[in-house]
Image (cartoon, rainbow, N blue to C red; front, side, top):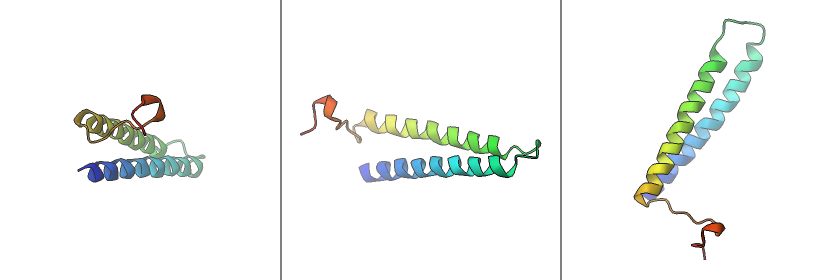
Length: 77
């Protein structure tokens, strides 16, 4: 189950990066038109993916499937 959780985290991160660059592309393409909301929709998708990422990481830490292995926690060998 840990590998599935890590795969979901990686996919969400990739989705956030894709949404970031699509928003940038929409921003440049729709510079002259004031009626296009594609940049705003890309921002909404990015915020949704970021919230999902935080929830998945919080779930993984709560259930113990993800562990803190940072040097400052003292648990890493």
